[in-house]
Length: 574
Image (cartoon, rainbow, N blue to C red; front, side):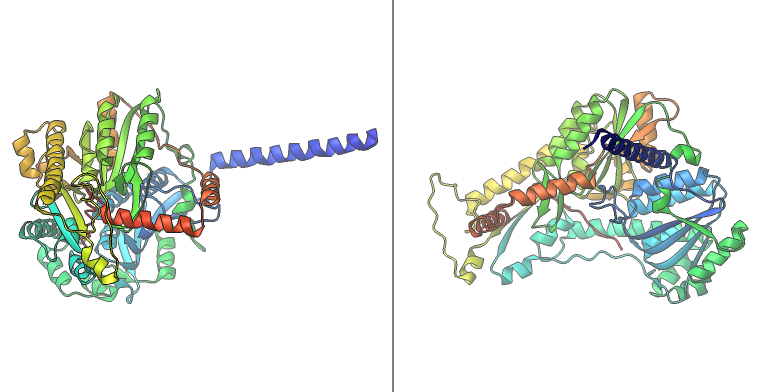
């Protein structure tokens, strides 16, 4: 290339580089400012479907995901302080979450109310949980034909052993203590035992009383009036409108017009979605965080040792201890971080995973405070009990200090399928856990003792860490699940409140005064996760022998799974 041409080419390259840099700088500057928000905007908070504790970055830039409960907190705090936001519109379409998160979200809306900005709820579809959130708003509207399930609370347990018997599979069920548990009896019994039935009724009584009292207080009714409306068993909003539990029959367009009048806007109302507003920086909204750092680490789902994965027995994802332990280490070694809040939303754990996390927390020299969400039961309680302080919502399901285990006998199933088994062994009990034959009396005693040993270990650790006499802990353990306010009365938790309560306690434990910076350990980006998935797919063998080997591994796991402390205490009260 001639020298002149080379100069022109290099000049063009330099211009392109400068343009890219300028564009990147502009994007970076804009990102720091967040999205453009018009004056007199109304925040639209849509609550529908699952409300997760946390979410990994989307797998693609175009993937949508629901707001987490933490993001809802942030959005409501920022918008309350932001002069550009003049009101809050809570749009409800059957939010599916536990009562702990419901109480937390109600608390966040109550805090927003202190800004004196109008808050209106629109019910597209909801049950008691969604309606409870709507009650935190100034006004509630819904179309007359909108679905509104406001007929009381129920727990339904479908028992599996009868089905397994038809397949030739017998279950050998062991548990300690007597209330352990709804999930255990689902897999281990054909009906509920009297203690478990007593536990469920106690929790139902408490939760129903709380619900009725919440409606009565927020809608200026007597408890008797609310109970009368609930017992009608109506399923459409028109009945709630007629009884005054909803303020009027309005569709979305009419609610928008109503909101425009309330905030003094003529013409089109400027609505900002909560997902868009979530990227507004706190300082741009008018809030400042500075000073010492507090780390928030999430422990959600069934907790197992290692990396986690899919559990074929419970048919849900397991959270491995590796990531939780790694984040605890990062936070404990970070000099700027003065305290840790462990956010727990776990119905249980399997194996020794919960014990590993509990042991790690004991060794962390910085204050660790637990904030319980919907669940922190069994293994979820085990990972919590080493914390300096434990905070729960009034309706958090927690405790369940007990152990259950189910072990299958597949001999009848093998016979039905025409499978024959040859076993060669060295050692009298070498095939004890293969599950192709029933356990004999001695083996059943060994199996039962191993479950009892785990229970005694759980109760003793709980007593030691909660500084409670072993005999007293035994009384409140017995595998019994408690609602948060009951757990506090029994000394299993220290305070009732939200994650903000836990942050305040962490500050106190660490001797921090004034504002703090809250940080969540970074999760892998969508590019990193895509790269890992591609790498995993590349390594995965798809030959028939490899597939057969993996199928055999799965069968072995199904046959020999020992579910120590595994207690998905998903007692859905709905």
